[in-house]
Amino acid sequence: MISKINSAALQGIDAYPVTVETSVSNGMGYQITGLPDDAIRESLTRIGSAITSNGFYMPRTKLVVNLAPADSRKAGTGFDLPMAVGILLASGQLTDFGKLQDYIIVGELGLDGTLYPVRGALNMACQAKQDGYRGILLPLANVDEAGVIEGIAVYALLHLKDLIGFVQSDMAIEPVRFSNAKKQIDENDFETDFADVRGQQNIKRGMEIAAAGGHNALLTGPPGTGKTMLAKRLPTILPPMTIAESLETTRIYSLCAQQPMATGLMRKRPFRSPHHTCSDTALAGGGSNPLPGEISLAHNGVLFLDELPEFRRNSIEVLRQPLEDRTVSIARAKMSVQFPASFMLVAAMNPCPCGYLNHPTRACTCSARAIRWYHRKISGPLMERIDLHMQAEPLPLQDLMRLYPVSESSAVIRERVCKARNIQSARYADSGIYNNAQLPDRMIDCFCQPDESARKLLYRYTESYQLSARSYTRLLKVARTIADLAGTPKIELEHIAEAVQLRLPDQPLLQDNKRKTLGVKANTHFR
Image (cartoon, rainbow, N blue to C red; front, side, top):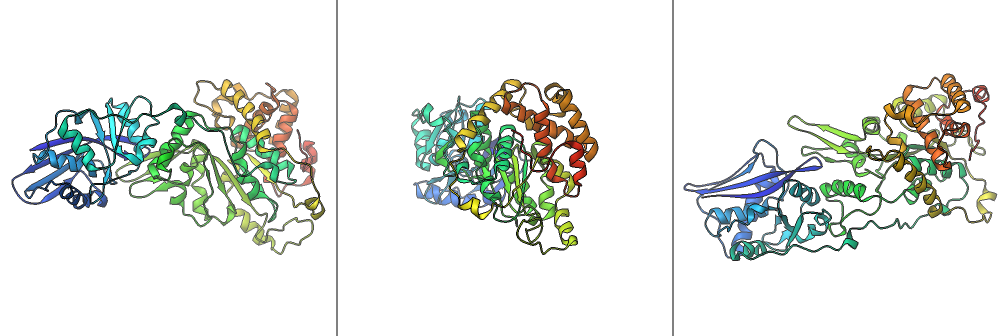
């Protein structure tokens, strides 16, 4: 006898339908086909114990389970529940009244029949809705996660007995009801605040510009100047996630099982800060069954790389393609997957190995060769993809101990950022672009036209520093963001001048006469 149960598997961030076919016939032996991984091969042991613990029996004849389509690799423990029900149906211990064909069934079984959560429940719920199923049956721990999808009924199961009772009695199973309040995105609520940071007004201004336009930023300065402190406060001034952004981000965390199952949609933009010893696979993602890495986990949020030159070079270089395309492509012999990676890169580094190059009071102990070697660990193409290059200066002790008036809080800065983002949302409506950093090159001439005086300064700067086309367009995008913060429809001279000033520090070998030629002084802050 043959039974068929609908289920789902994961490939990249998306799910696809899988039919669990079970055959019980004359002969001996158990077999699972359809390219299962080790977790699926071991599932018959778990299933056998769960079935016998609930008063049923495992067939002692030939048992074949096929996961169709059989030419795609399957992974995970989500097939335990559909396989168990399929075995009971195929062996005649249960009778299907025709209801199961309307549902997707997923779940991991314990030895006593208890159901445990699975990876990617949200992704599977999306696929069930897309394929027109009536609902999805899954463990209770996954219910809040899957319930954020409108238009698909979600059914909670605690035990194998729950599904057996539903099949045997032909009774209607009630979906879980979700309140709309549970699906709303909360306002940002952080323990840290920009008001905690003393001094470094130029960095605060640069972080505001980065947040308003979604730009990448590099903070350079001696140890203890507040680079990490400032970077960790960047999420406090980012605008709240929209429902669409939250759904995209939650799908990634659902796939990695890193989001607490009972929280539903993610409410805060992610902030990922991997250690500098992490590998390129940990950053970009991968594995035999590819999973997202830190780059994709920072989707719609911030990826912070502290002590950037201490990362291995091959790890840093994997950032190039995601920064340009906003996706991560992972190719394997039998599959190729793409993970979304629209994130803000924020990096921090010392100016030299000892950290005290150009320090006003402490002498640098590094040789010129060591300094060159230190900076060469970060390639030019990667530096070009970083829009803002900011210098953190050490704060004098008397200024540090002085009782400053309370500086601007994150809430005040975030209000200006949100206004700038609203301008961008209106400008790029229905184009799939959410901020200036995402503006494609083909639309630069349409939305980033400077006035005549700004054009002249931009020409002098581009000619003097021999900027590449990428650096030129990124400079225009930053100027566009500065104009949005000022509420100005046109890019003017002061907007280009501030964007230039925020780009100058990435040219450490340039002489002062070039700065004078441009008419831009070092450490000048345009507001």
